[in-house]
Length: 142
Image 1: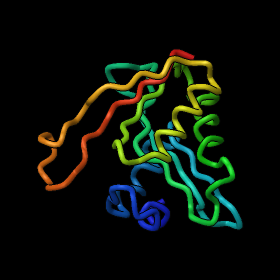
Image 2 (image 1 turned 30 degrees about the vertical axis):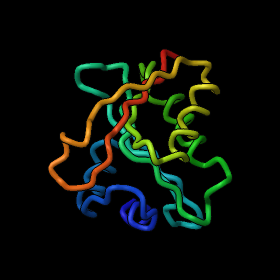
Image 3 (image 1 turned 180 degrees about the vertical axis):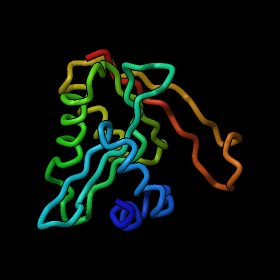
Image 4 (image 1 turned 90 degrees about the horizontal axis):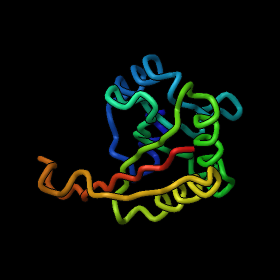
């Protein structure tokens, strides 16, 4: 997961330790795609403690050679079909990430679900310089 996130050159990269913990502690709400015994994509997510029917998708990444074949959408569909009790999906996306915006809009269409956007974290919320605002995308119920 760490390698795919690092190679994406777009995701906020966390430590390899964080990805190992995520894979262990949030395996039920995340998915990893493997091809030829190598991780080629993942979606990491968790159930929001104050919203037990909402899956918060933290990161989506697909290896460069696997892009353009619908893998990210299939991973999201898999989670929507397998996470118990999930009726809503949330994620945050920066305005400059057209690929992610298209991915989640297509997911909402496939689920025939409402797709709402609202500012969640503005530039001033981030202590590090240059982090773009994160827009909350809320899809559901489905």
